Image 1 (cartoon, rainbow, N blue to C red):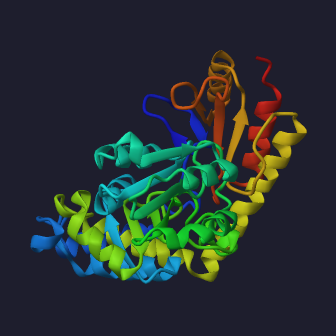
Image 2: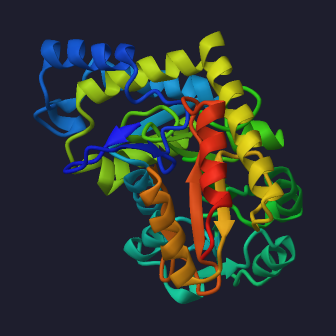
Length: 366
């Protein structure tokens, strides 16, 4: 629970993406403090000059190991990681295909990379028939195709059916000499989804070629990463502006992220994940019993589809008056008619917390 500035009341936070509730863990705070006191608050240079410390190298090794990829590069955020991989892979002979509900950072990556309209296509959300049409329509002369999607879609909590996508792509792979490459931003999945927290790849029992992730959600710290083959990671090291021309994460963030990955990849981490899953199921079942429309699924993002801006605002205010912090998503963040209250469950939520939120929801008359 949190006390807002200027208020004496404690609020139950239902809008945090710290899914495993690690952001205030004393072990992370102590790791950050030790590293900062040892090597300073900031790196003092970009990576290729004098800004690479052992903590950066170890975090890259550890996160690659955790997600099951050969190599990784860390960024200041998953947002800049998406921009970086886009800049590294862009070319006049590269065609981009993306889900219509992709995160803003993916859309922005295409724009910053200068991808012309004739070199990109968008398919309706999770519509594999439309994805196939996009593949069939790739113009001649394209050497590489990037198929880009979120693992978990942040506004809805649903996921890309990765195994089905890969089956669809298989017959097309030999058409493009530089590859048909799947790029997945699983920022809301890694650490919080799947049997052991490995995200959408684990949940779907399938894999992507390039994985984007964050240390700022389930791991509770800050920063992002790209994990892939050594060849892709080397291309990013040499060509990604958002990696090359900026100071990296401070060693404090790196040390805390390392500690978070180690905790997550342990029996304690699995227990936190089981608790998160149980609280998520409790909340989803309660919402459905109350008759609210939602999107089914096991992810701790639970959307209430209110479908009306004024009603969504009244519901947010109703929760606030009862000491619960939630976020209302309205146009232009979501399309008109898709107005949503997004709840995010954390491992620190208790059964009593969830029961209280459901009770508050049951009393809404707006």
